[in-house]
Image (cartoon, rainbow, N blue to C red; front, top):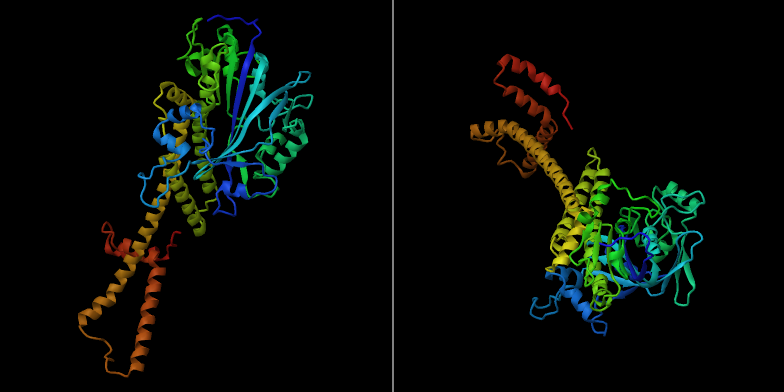
Length: 550
């Protein structure tokens, strides 16, 4: 490969796709789905429902959409697009199921203006789409936005990828600017008006919010995008509330077209591939395994030949980032309908989304179980009952997730499947799935053992009551007659005897139940044939005085 650290590369075409997974919190309107609640928000609601990913019935369905569809296996197609519309596939009255993904889009924002560093000229990017994705049965939503730009300096693109997409600042520098964030970001409307801007410099806002709510705040320009959803720990009113699931850095995808990718140096490849974790001003850590094993760990070079004829397209996948770099002069790479660009916006976006959806859903399941254990108090019966309901509900939801959404094979196309596996591997989805599954099984085993313990205790007590009741039953049965012959007495006298006998019997049973633990201990002492009869009789009083265990 040709290398040069002095060449000033120019990115002819640039695309960035950001996914922000958030956890949706339960609301008082439990019967409504999150997207139904979104549609009920009349005030300040810019979201419009897309009836179908392909806009069936319009002229939007093109070859690139068809190629997207056929790239996936049938069960993945049903997950993304819904079931086939065939009159012979279902029983009478059973309508075909819709897509598990519900997509909303807002159209009031058209561009993004970024100031990356102090003293640098702002960068203007077109906002292609900003969408909100919901999923059936899973309390997870994705904010997805796609940005594009042309003829940008290579170092500017790397700096942009590193700085943009952070939900809140992790600290502030000496000048009061948010560390690792863009200096300033503005969402622009159709006529160029500023709709909202970032506030990462407002240190007091983030400090006070975290101190009050024990949760980091959200930068104003990201908070604006999600409206009318509100951050759950905040004091704002809103039916749709969300929480951050994990890292403040959004998962990112990037499409980068340069004139000759073979002239990129290894240092430039490293900084681009590790853009989610390596600061642009930081020296490359040569001893880091991510650096020394970069090509074998993160690069997919099936379409990289390092020749003039090409193809020279490199895929870099670290889990957090998915980056495609190729030759802008090659039609197969930059063609928006049939080239790698079309595949990037369709197939690759979906495989990246599926991998991160799996991770987000599993983290929500884990958080749900942690919260259930946190609220458990084994001394309180109602707490155990509530814990049982939450665990069984979580187990049921996890079962639906496993059979509806969890899969390892998504495509028969080798490169699509390989890139999906690479994304899932670096995200650690398989290990996380097994961890959540083990947590649920541990909780289920605890509930089963607790239920068996209660049943065993009940059986012991019933056995004790039955044993002591046998004395009266056998005695009267041996006589073969009634002790009190009142069969011919007036009905009133018989009722009196019946009530008295019932009361005495009930009193005896209640006494036996209340003292069943002590009686069981007495029976254990008397049945111990390792001791003499005298020692067993002398131990009876001690067994009776022993306090029953809870």
